[in-house]
Length: 96
Image 1: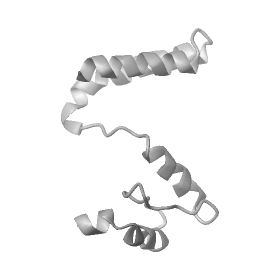
Image 2: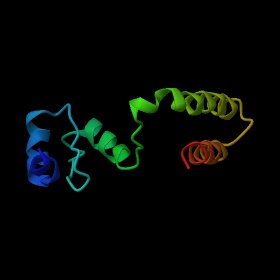
Image 3: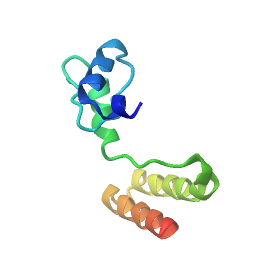
Image 4: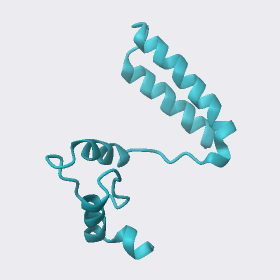
């Protein structure tokens, strides 16, 4: 399993056989002209944060705060950048 997930060639072969999946290896390449949705998801996954389901209750407060910040952004009360900074600070405070 480890060999498969770390081998970029295997990950690219998987893309062709199962286009609904994105590679777990961040060094694999996704051809955006062949797989436009997967390319976007793959790029987003490089910056994603893994959230443990074991900490779901602890994370719920962060999610709730994110909803509040989203509403403030939509209402024009804060900028998206301000909301991103606030949620980042909340996450750092929660897990540090």
